[in-house]
Image: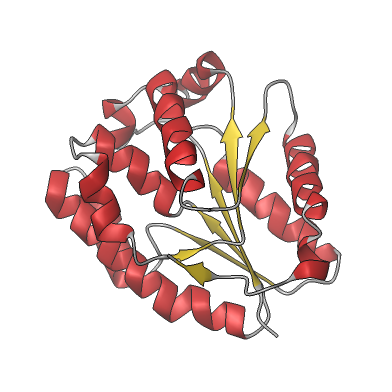
Length: 210
């Protein structure tokens, strides 16, 4: 039996990491075997990308991220799915369609580097008031180069364009309005989307390629 792949997306500061951890905990409490992961990955290549993001930019960064994603899928995501686990990824391809555009690349070029990736069974996009996100980012001691390059409003707009772009390519997606919601309430909304799709009962090929 194959597992289920869920990606969590949204602007910097929207609460992806917190929501991914809480969702993983909630699903584990329901008896599911869960594998929580992130992009860039925790591999040596992923760590190198995190360390050099301030110096690496444009096409060079986009290609490095795409290479890390290819390895992440082959070495971590697909083996976990084959073991029947629920894989939750904090960031995936939609992040490239946003962050690499902030870094000056056209959408068509970014897609060319990433068109190979398997579709998640479901991609959840978290949305929040840009002013709330901006306030959260101000509380961070250090911002990455790309966090400084964009703005919550611009990132949100680009994520909506990514949502539309991938929707035309038959990605299964849902948007979660986080405005006024506590973290537990956000996870409840995410679980509602999953249950609405009868995720656990349907379980077709959970990871299909373009």
